[in-house]
Image (cartoon, rainbow, N blue to C red; front, side, top):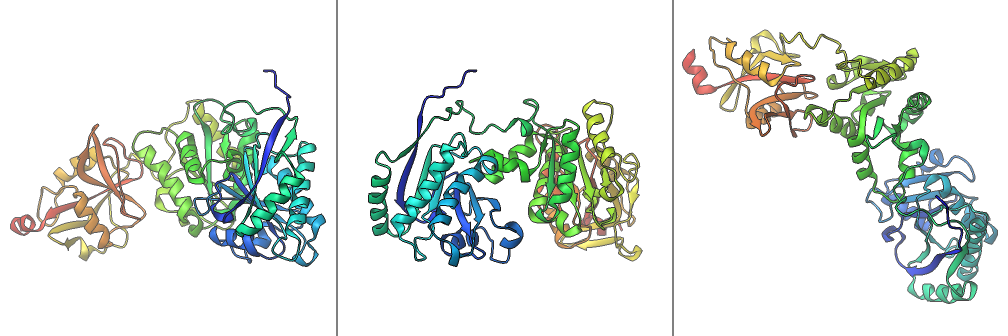
Length: 477
């Protein structure tokens, strides 16, 4: 395709508003060894404090791109580390404008609308002169080709309406047409959401692997990412992938990536990290899709640091687990690629999934074999592990406990009561007697109580407990 190099314009404007409420792809702010003014307001909205920033922006000139996550109106916030405020003058304002555009080339190349405040305007610098310096830095970056290729608009934002009028007048003198001319090629139509080649899925089938991790474990996750990439696999790694998705919402992109990923790998160094809110959301979302029969890929875990397999939730430790500190990444690659070639079956469980014999409930004493809950009785000694709904129903028909037969799987309401009574481990999914359309059956996740559904023949990671109505139980005894 032949690109057009006809000149085009990048619009520049000044408007009244709160930088947190500006609908832009990116808002750019300075971090001057402390959080002040607009930067402080945005950071607080994103849940960040001054104590968080040194680790994220460790040196002068470093940058960090935060996803907006709906906490601010912009899709992302870009923070740039600058000199301390006492040394921040017009030359530094000019450098800020230049560096902001330059940073977006790699941090958020899909940016079309950039918003900024007039740096230094509220801290001793003349607003009009500060605007001139910042704008000059932007013009220099654009002249050097150091800006996002699809950039269409730059907006300077100030809360003071009277100051905005003065800045608008100053802008008209500096830039009569209120636009910056560039001879950079027009971006191809429809490329706003496109990923760069190195991060793009190999086909419409999506990603080979989605990597889930807590931010504290990012360097371990990066090792996994680089290992997979070296073997030609397409990988969604949020540290690299999310900034390249431009203006799309963070959570929406995570959901889309998980939906399009064949495998999911959790990377973790602690029990707390693997059950952290968003990490758990990701692997549970993937597991739910798999249990529902909408995915055929595998859920795997890489443990690093001093973490042991026993520290994992049972839903993860009963699947493939790789220990990073044992140098087993090659085995992980082999597992993923061989599965892609179709010569590997379901992950090997720590125990044979075909062995579905009844297991005692964890912590259950023989004397508490039968427990009354509300108006029904629960048989605590009968807990089927890795069982299909069909097998669980067959088992209930032959179960004899407490002198009674005809035990059944619990209803959804009964499972809710059992969960409240804390009779069984909470990191598991338990089948309900109730069925769903398409020959599915319902189950309940005991960690948060939400209801899932899946094929009745599916068994991996699912458990079954058995109940009997209290009056019928008393009658049979």
